[in-house]
Amino acid sequence: MTQADPAELWRQMRERLVTFVARRVDQPGDAEDIVQEVFLKMSQSIDGVREEERLEAWVYQITRNAIIDHHRRSATMARTRAQVAADRSLLLGESDAEESALLAQCLKPLVAGLPDPYREAIMLTEYEGLTQAEAARRAGVSVPGMKSRVQRARRRVGDLLGACCRVELDARKAVRSVEKHGPCPC
Image 1 (cartoon, rainbow, N blue to C red):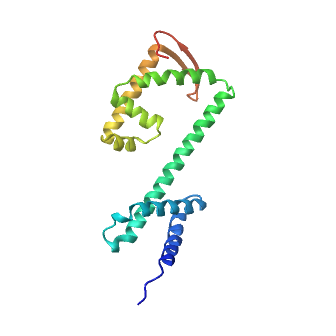
Image 2 (cartoon, rainbow, N blue to C red; image 1 turned 90 degrees about the vertical axis):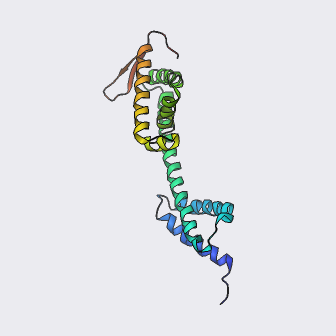
Image 3 (tube, rainbow, N blue to C red; image 1 turned 45 degrees about the vertical axis):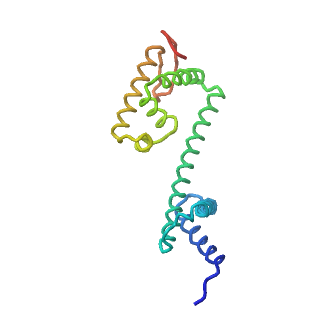
């Protein structure tokens, strides 16, 4: 029995992986990029594989992880695009732009002044866009514990904001006006 050409084996593996990935992503063109990432990760950690029989399972696990990473990046990019669109609407002078900008400026120091566990909960869920479950894993706490932290943090920020600003919302919960009153860290 003769050994197969290594280049041919890599080509066949690449074809199978591209097909595997293409079925799991929205844009088929992204499949090639993801497979290239997989090959790069494989080349960086191939020495860690102890059992040759498990090589294919290892490759597919790396591929599944790369697909998950791709979906996370896509979600982050979508949130970023939404934020840019919101920022653009502020720059274009939509009716509540000044009030929203003032409120955003007020929230930063209020969040920064929260105790560590609450500040971390708000930063992970509101600023980084993680789900409460993802934030709990990253912070090393239980999901109910993170939910409690987020609720308490939001309540504290709301109380602090209410002590220094009057915020009027419209029917869509968009900021209609913001007026400073009392000592404010903004």
